[in-house]
Image (cartoon, rainbow, N blue to C red; front, side, top):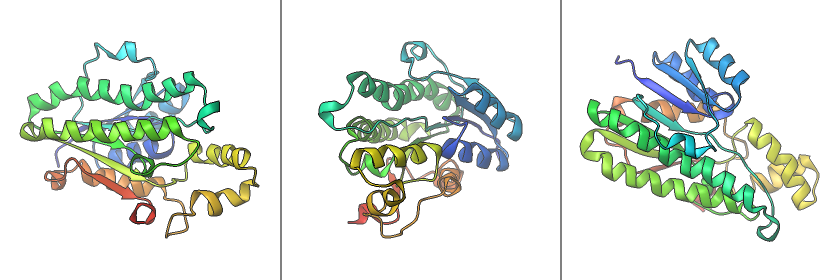
Length: 245
């Protein structure tokens, strides 16, 4: 097996941590990038990887960046829930910087190395909200829709250079981010927290459970493999049938 260098943003917890751990188990060199220094150090130490402490919302610091990685996993993200008329403009800008502008800049920084090698994988952790909209999530939904476009353009430009680019589109995944959303949605909709998962989060899903981080990591492992060389420009829903409707 060829050992690849895999950079995972938001790698200190949730989906990113699961992908970092899976990549290490598969024998790759892993760089865990996260704003959470303690978490990044912990995961990197436990998997024998490296930690990169980065505030990816500080996009000015990424403009001159050069990355030597074979696989880039754009996963870092946050959530804010509010009606549009109450949505703080700075929160909107923050989410777009972190979840759209930063992935663009990281792709831009990684492609020269990938092109030189004639091989590369861009894996963008999008969302069912990259394919469908929900009320009260204007920044998140619009950023994820933008990420879908970034991924497709990267796929078209990278095709002749051995670089693929794809999105993974989970529904609700059992992560700290989603656990926080349960409380936020309960407040927004005025319902008890115990009703949020079944009656709000999973109301459109045919499979009435959350996706697990390890399931997302398994799909990411396939997309970064040589077997996925013909898979590019795609969006892979892992939403229990939500977007089938």
